[in-house]
Structure formats: structure tokens, C-alpha cells
Length: 196
Image (cartoon, rainbow, N blue to C red):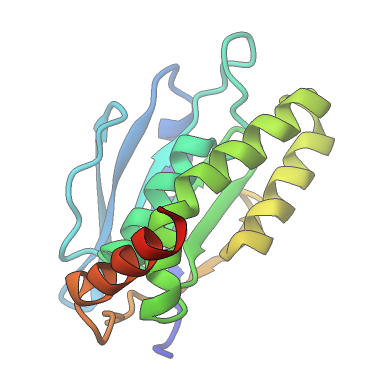
């Protein structure tokens, strides 16, 4: 595994100031020579990130209309896509009012990736909705159960406070050794013969 990346404190401090706005920001952390720099934009739509190490977004401190202190189900689907399925970033960071989450999905192998591709969105939604029925989404109980469920699903989630040093995983050159169609066609054939 490649050496981890320590994000410079000035980047964390500047993004923490953006987090205080009443709307989301998002952006990328990338190399410029030997130095890490960042960019940002307003809104929820993330730019593609082919040359960066990390991308990120903020959750505004709106406790009336939102539940900002944990990543959402939509966040987790996106993080699976960019850290595993497309493998365009090593880590996605969510800056919430109280915490900084450094998150990635742990790709295992090509077979497991096909299973995840077919089931991950439903597993995320089912878990989130079941927990939301049992716990107040703004509670510490919900946050703890949600994060632990995601970790069991295959995510690595590191939680930091704003005064800690943040070290994340470098982007991996992971690519499945077998192309998707080669795996998907026999799997679909098997499923059609078994269950139809």
C-alpha cells in the first residue's frame, strides 16, 4: 500500500471555514508538484476527479432541516462509486459541523465487486431506513449504529475532530483484473437459469 497522505492544516482550516456557510461546498485535494492544494465550488454536484487524491464536501450546520453530523445514504453511494467502482479517488472527506469523516470503500476482488455493484445501493438504503425507524436521526445512537453498519458493509471510516491531524489513504491503482462484461454475462446467465 502506498504511503498515507497528511493533509496540510491550512487546507483543513480553510475548508472548516467553508463548512460554516449555510450551503454545501465541494472540491478536490490534488498535487501541484510536491505540494497538496485544494479547490472548491458551491453546491452538491461534484466535478469528476481523475487527477486528484481526495475529494470532499461539507454539511452545513442546519439542524432544523437536516441531520448534518453524519454522512447520508446518498453520500455513501457516491463514496462507493468514486473510491471503488471507478477508483478515481483514494478517500472522500465529509466535513460536518462536529466531525470530519475520511471514508473509502474497500474493494476486495473482481467477483466481490460484481456482487457489490448489484447490491450496494439496496443494502445502504435498507440499513439507513431500518435505523431511521428505530432511532432519532439526529441522535448519537443513530450516528454510531449507522457508522458501525457501514463499516460491516466494507467501508473504512476514520472520524476526526477539527483540531486533529488528518491522514488518509493515497489513491490506489486498483482495477479489477477481469473486465465487467466478462464477469457480468456469466453471472446473469447463471441467475437466469437458476431463478427463472
